[in-house]
Structures are given as structure tokens and as C-alpha cells.
Image 1 (cartoon, rainbow, N blue to C red):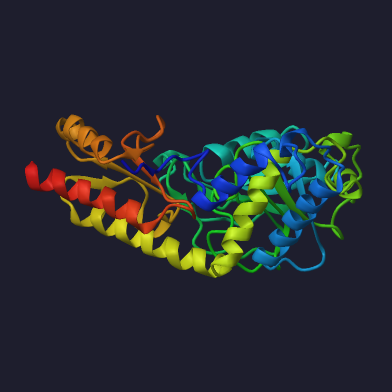
Image 2 (cartoon, rainbow, N blue to C red):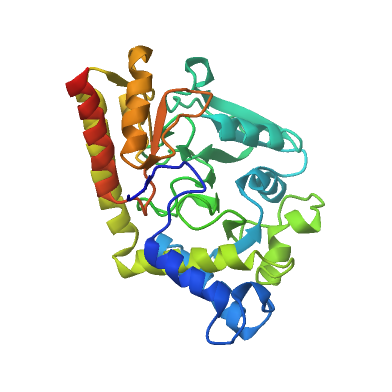
Length: 355
């Protein structure tokens, strides 16, 4: 039976990528050695790192002012790293509280300065992207989380503010095109649209870095990592390699524009069914709905056992919602085919037909 993987992360990856990565574990580049046992400073892996950085800039359309890094860890470390590198000593920045990870970023930034919350949807259980108020004068940047995996909301446009942007794009990077001009820093954990868990991508404006006036711990200093070409610490070689393969795959089928078209089709299919089917309702407000994570629930829980049996029997995996929201969550990252969303829709319609 084909498995339809709606896992929120780590998540589905292209089959072609998995096959090539599996071969590299056994024998990388015909070396007779595994990818995970060669030196990270060998020419074979240095080439992987360089290609990963180059593909990132190409796919996202990043101008030359951006340095791209692949470091260990995930976006949770990025919450603190971003503030260390771009919030001035004794200064402040503006933040949007749109979900769990956004709230965590605010908490970490508060360790270093004033994190001014200029918009929050916490009171409605993060069911929408909040309206933004004016940021206090002197705010160094606006930090926001572009897509909220748990609650199924997503910024539909770039915030229009008179300060640089810092964005956690972990769960929707490479899913749609955007203008990189307003950004000072973009960071994203790999385990959604890029690769396996273990590495995080930072793309930062080299001209804006190094101006906070604070002492930054070496591992959290993006300039330190840039000078070492992401090799200050032994990198997560396998995660970076798979991420590079995934970006090759994206490029081969038309890049981010193709991903965006596919993602719009998938989101349209599932949301049309949620709205049409009288047994279901969405969590996120329509104008804030995520194209990566559709959150929904049954209007009557008496149908839960029957629905759970149906989707599990259909080979669907990872559909249960996060405990903060309940219900169900269909995560539709780049590698998920439209066919899998159709299977879910068919199951929803089968429940309607039989109940």
C-alpha cells in the first residue's frame, strides 16, 4: 500500500532524493566510503556545501549581499541567534506573536533587549495572522514567523514596515516566491521543505551584520561561521547533503515558481472540501489559511472513530492535529503529491456518504 505522508516534520521528501541519499550512505561519489564517514573538509563534501549554498541563493533569488550558512541545530536556536546578531546592545526590536514558535522567539529575544510585540492572535488560539500596530521608534527590525505549523496560519504578504525584516521561514521556505529586498535575515530549519532534521539555514545581509555593539558567543556569531564557510563546527553532513539533493530536485522541475503552483493546487483541493463538507470545519480564519498546514476538525466528535479508521485504512500517515489545536492537520510540503491530497479528500467524502 502506498503511504500518504502528511507528517508536520520531519516530513516527506522526494523519492528520488531518498534513493540517491541511500546510495551515498553506502558509497559516496564512488569513493568506496560512506558520506557519513568522510572528512567534512574533503573536496567531495566541500563541493556539497558550496552547491547547497549556491542553490539556496539561486532558488530564493537572493542578491549578492546575502551570506548563506548551513549550521547545526534548528530554528529554535535561531531565535536567540537572530537577536544576538541584529538587536543592538541595550536596544529593541519588534515581534509578531502568531503562534507557538513566534512566542518562543519573543521569549529568547527578551533575554537580550526589548522585544516589542506589535501584533498577537494568542487570544483567539492563533487562528489568524494578527493586525500589526506601529513599532516603537528605534526598533532594529521586525521579526515574524512566515508560517505557523501548529495552527495552520500563514502570512499572505510581506509585512509593510519601515525597518528591516527578520523571518523564521522554517515551514514554508521554497514553497512560494517572494521579494528578498526587505530582509536582513532569513532562517529555516531543514526538516520541512528542505531535508532531514539536523541543520538550519541562515541567509543574512553581510552589510548589516556586526553592528550590534555586543559581545556574541562564537557559536552564535553568524560572521564567525561565514568566515569559516559553515565549517567553524563540524557540519551535519548528511542533513546538508539531503538538503542539497532536494534543492537540485526543485531546480530540475522548475524551481520555486513550480512549487508555488503545485502548493496552490493542493491547498485549494483540501480547503474546498473542508468548506463544502458539512461534517468538517477549519481552525484558521479563511484569510489566514496556510498552504503548508491545513488544520481542521470534525464538527461532531461522534464521527472521530469512523474517520480515523477510514484515513488509516487509506494509507494516510501523520494526520492527527497538534495537542494545542486538536482535530487534524494535513501538512502539504513541497514533496507531497496532489494525489495524496486527493486520497484525503476522498476519505472525507466517504465519511460524509456513509454517515
